[in-house]
Image (cartoon, rainbow over all chains, first blue to last red; front, side):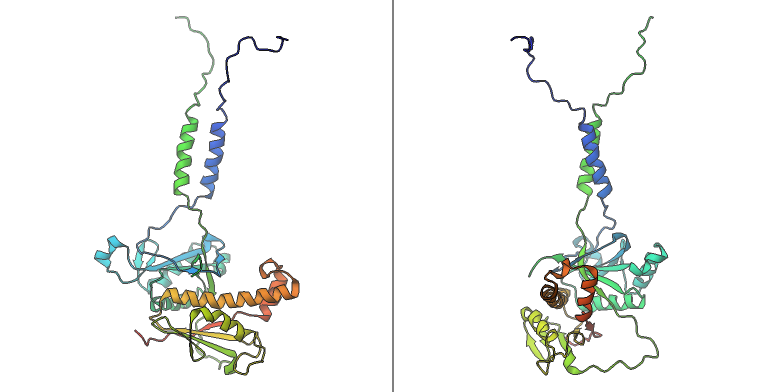
Length: 155
Length: 180
């Protein structure tokens, strides 16, 4: 009977951690691939409104963002609290929108231009006057696909 | 001075996991998984110089929605609560000639939206949302009735068929500046 019994029982053997780096690396690569770094620092405060009839935006690389809202607290000393437009990494005026769209187009392939979308990320409190002006500028720039950025939720 | 020949020494890979963990945590923290969502709209192109006269549209086929600077609604000349807008729009689109003040048929129905420069963006999005919801619900009802499936579950060509019968026509007038 003692044939199968271990003569010197050492207790439970340590779990091999040799595969741990592999597992961790796998996770690491997953996150590296899926991650999208925040490109712009926001100078305006944006709380986007809620809506129920929302659609997912496709092809993030073809989307250009226009941020509208009151400047963030630390900027209010120099820029006031009136709503402003932010393009890329700086405050902008209305006339700069056309230029912005043109430069966004330049960076893209010609075939992709008709699919380009402009996403308006605007704060809830913003008045429609400024949004309308932006829309007019976009019409002038012939960038007609727009998207009012909203988050899911009911009122 | 006699040395034992050991061949190539193995690199200690014990700390590999630690390094990988560090990187992993960095990417975990910086990653943003949120998908952008929103209400998609198409702007009308700029009017050309020699503009042909627009086709005449019968007044009954236009559903006028006005929003003033105080975020109040005026629909077809009557003040309305935002909660009723969806039902109102659905009734208008689905009228099919029954009520002489509402639309002839869904294909001709146009919703005209006009807002003030002082209207808040929140209200504007909400109105757009309610109107979109009206169309989505109608399309869904038709899809269930005709194909026994929800609109989003239908295939492309069936969706197109319904879209053609119930086109989403929301026209936005140039905004006015009344209420500052």
